[in-house]
Image 1 (tube, rainbow, N blue to C red):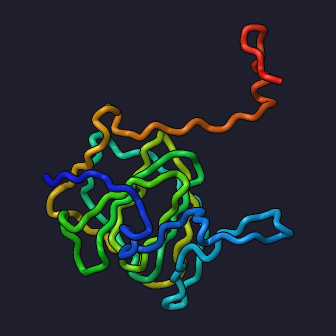
Image 2: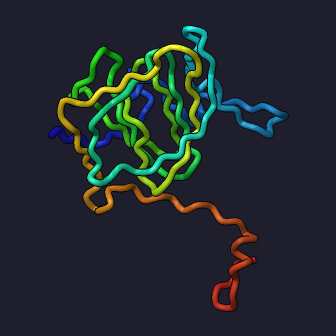
Image 3: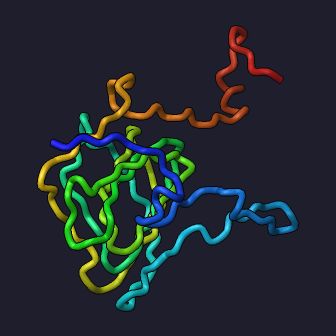
Length: 196
């Protein structure tokens, strides 16, 4: 069995596989009378091959059993596939270069912030969603249309992903969800006063 440790997701490290989508200051300019910051042209959506069209979806992922083991990979030869997390949880992405077959030693695993999305180039091998929280939603843009756009391959040997040994569940700690002032006031007691 192969073992692999996740590495941080960066634009440079991910460049062979696609785009990292994040609110980078280099891509920002102001619009709407300076009331909005636009982070511009963040991903190359490529879905028009063989009369394909873009399709917008929400995927809801749940974790694989622990210890996390990668046994297969998939690719979409006719279009890119874009994932942006909608919940404040970090997640993992497993990828390998776009070639005819994938071997365990080809696979890299990236640790992704909840503020980062990814866009796989057409034909890039990747694992289905690798979420670490109990449940996580993603905005997904991929290809709709005719043609065979899914290739799956079992790996010659499984890959165990080494996660933080200090976290026995093998999951990154979820960030707390924001709570409104009104919600806090609803639970206010004499012992726990909300600052005014």
